[in-house]
Image 1: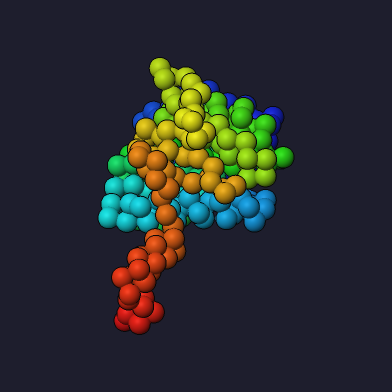
Image 2: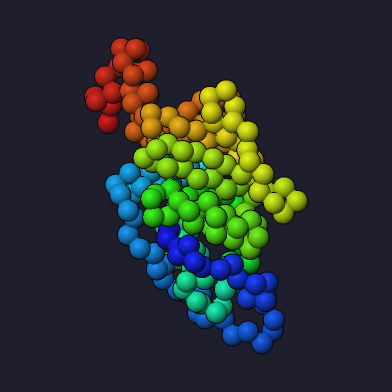
Length: 224
């Protein structure tokens, strides 16, 4: 989640994979600092629960948050450790991981990244990390959101360069990779379907079902 503003972008040679490179073991543990506020932790948890519930019948994606992505065998922490607050990798096995280690994952990088801004990370998220995600990760969709100020912006990779996404009338931004819109709803970042429906949490979905049963004269609490 954090990175020093003085970090420099690794050169192409730093991430090259010649045959003589000896890679560290692939079962590396994530090495991320604690999240800065409850708002940041709760927002990451919300995005994960929403996507996992929406895609509960899929096994071809991996979603995580505040997890280290190891992408260089050199393992220089100030340069090569980047833990996005929330990220999604498509076309991969959905299983628990200690970290995301690119050379153990067929060279795959995240398809979508969301960073949560804070006073200490905003400059890096808008600058260095945006450049890394554009030039090294080649992540197609990159978003940032500030849980305190509600600043929200997104980018899509076009010909190797991030171009700002245009919001719709509601201020939502389209993620081509997810096939969903992202937007602010009641001060938190949520997913919306292409038709504009709010993607519900499991609790919201259960409450809606319970309300429907009550309309039909059925007590949901009486159902085993």
